[in-house]
Amino acid sequence: MAKFKPGYMDPTVENPPARLSKNSGGVCMMNNSWRDKQNPSFINFISSFLTSNSFRLNFVPISPDFIFNCGGLSVAFIFVTQWDCCNAEYIFTRAKKLKGQFAHLYVVVSLPTREQNDSFVASYFKYEMQLGRPTFVPVQDIEMGFEKIVKIAHSCGVCKQQDAKSKLKAERNQSVQGMENFLKVLTSIPGIDNHDANSLNQAIGSIEGIAKASKEYILENTDLSSEKAETIVRFFRDSKFYLCPKIN
Image 1 (spheres, helix red, strand yellow):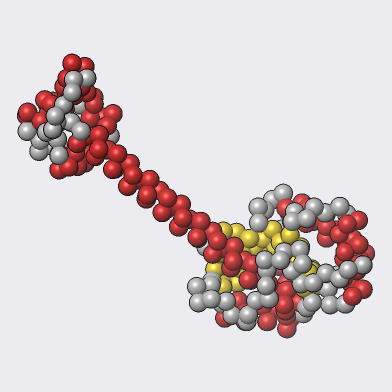
Image 2 (image 1 turned 90 degrees about the horizontal axis):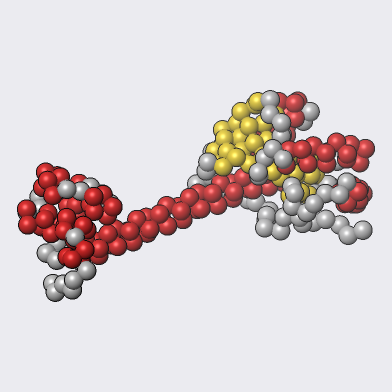
């Protein structure tokens, strides 16, 4: 049976360096029970790696083995450091259950030998796992596995921040476009210029509100002249006025 390469089921994940970018950082929550089953030297490695990448480590009773919070996004992980085919049913059942609880869940499995790799592949199909639900990331050793965990969490956080920036940019562009349309409508009224339109925007804020505003209200809340206020009121309410051709 073909051997899985590290990251085979998630080809976008590459072997990460010892340090991530200078913008890395966040919070890492580790399951207390998972910690107690590991070699203390490996826990020290994890602690040092997180510190070097500006992550704060907390030990808490959580359902997954790890939860990372990066860039406002939570990413959960199951980390199988010792593959045992006799325990395969528990591992895959747990993965299916947690996938229903976490939108972003990855399962990292250490498979240092060919025999373990073949056993994992057979079990994966035996328990009818759906590709990518959740994503499994086989690795050759536990240190590489944890480095991949941090790299995945960091990458997800960066993508989340980029999406947020894109949305803000889109909203800003929409706001600018909306203001441009607002000015076009108001400056189409005879005698109303950009200064008048901006004044009406600050005082009333919408075309609908301006259309309903009385002459007195416009005079009280803007610096428009009585003549311009009268023109605006007639424009929106007098069909004889707004239907006849205008020459600016």
